[in-house]
Amino acid sequence: MAAAAPPPPPTPTPTPPTTLPETGPVGNPIFARIRIANPSDVRPLHKLMYQLAVFERLPHLFSATESSLSSNLFNTPPFQSFTVFLLEVSPTPFPDAPVGAHPPITHVINLDLPIADPESQEFGSGGDAVVAGFVLFFPNYSTFLGKPGFYIEDLYVRDCYRRKGFGKMLLSAVAAQAVKMGYGRVEWCVLDWNVNAIKFYEEMGAQVLQEWRICRLTGDALQAYGN
Image (cartoon, rainbow, N blue to C red; front, side, top):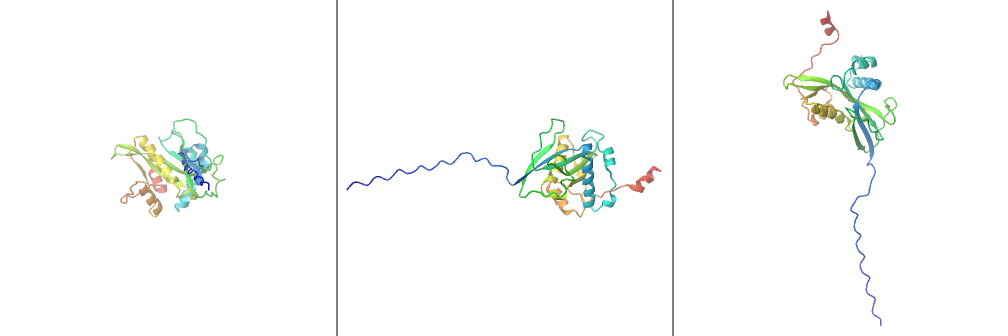
């Protein structure tokens, strides 16, 4: 009887790849850009400001017009007086901006679901981009610190873009500019019933000063001093 053939040698274990396969964007990417507003942005900016007044339950006090914004907001270089950072978002990357003194700030975030924007045509800003929010701020001065700072008059993100990190981007942009310029503070006000905003600001490291109250002269009370 012939001897049985020897068993075949074991098959070598495949060596796992040392590099991961290339993958595309995870989820639904959305591209964000924060840039300094200019006079051509007055129309969407005015709409955002009115939406903010409605959100704060104060539309009866809103009297700003596109003309008044154009006349007051763009008369000085950025950061010397009133400055507006505009938030734009797009499903596609923004083109590279020309090199300048104040380049835009860009971010990309991945969402589980795409954002349905019912006002995308009304707030369109060219291509696939839409205006999603803004922050308006200007310099003030602290006699205690002996340093200038920034006061944020308004920060607003449209409803469908909230709770996705865009408000944090806007506030962070102002704070970063203050640090860059050697300023000592960034301050703003918040309505006492807006508990979500209060929690958000505290999570960003802000102190909510309970002992301070806003004092305001406006309307007839102010005009009386002109007589």
